[in-house]
Amino acid sequence: MLLENKVAVIYGGGGAVGGAVARAFARDGARIFLAGRTLSPLEAVAGDVSIAGGSVEVAGVDVLDADAVERHTARIVEQAGRLDISFNLIGYGDTQGAPLVETGRERFIGPVSTAMEAHFNTATAAGRHMIAAGSGVLLALTAQAGRLPYLNTGGFGVICAAIEGLWRQLAAELGPHGVRAVCLRSAGSPDTPGVEESWAQHAENEGVTKQEWWARMTEKTALRRLPMLADVANVAVLLASDHAAAITAEIANVTCGELYD
Image (cartoon, rainbow, N blue to C red):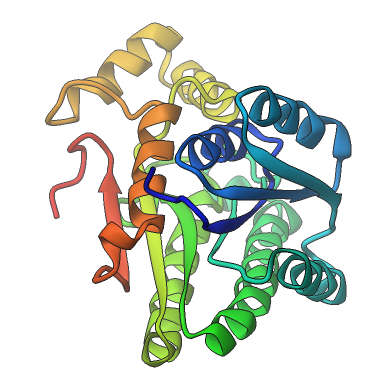
């Protein structure tokens, strides 16, 4: 198991991506701490992990509250003795479907601010403990829109680019202390409710069916398929493991070849 004896915290662990990553991490031996504002979806994922034999605990944490994040991180370290992996997978509340010139200021600024504050709070809290331990991995998830602009995606592409810039800075600052910072850049998983909803809006804007839009997206990729949740989760396992010990300051291409790096 690639993550045996590793301790991981997943913020937004009750969501589709967070849940998939939690199950994959637990399958590969990690001890999981799930955190988020709403307990019921976290508890549902925790139930799946427990049934599969994994070790998991749940806590209500508002990632926009820096003090709450710091207290939660300290509790994990006190309880588990260490923190090896931190992965923030919360939702940002962003909406798509209209050009920026027709987007209200708050509709644009709000999600960008949420994403930056949340990632800063969780990454720096974990980073301080990881520096003390001399090891650790900070993971983040972005999308191809952070590099290749798409029409009518609102602030989403800007959020992705900002997260990637933050992770480069973290990699530079924390690397001398043995801490890695790695992003996964996905092309969007069609088995994620949020992706399905946004793509349905894009399809409507283009006057095509949702299936036709998916086919267009698929044809853009080298593998002629899109990355599913399981694909993203499996790459996260690898990058969080010691097999990726030489990888930091990297944006892993999980687009099935929509982007060529």
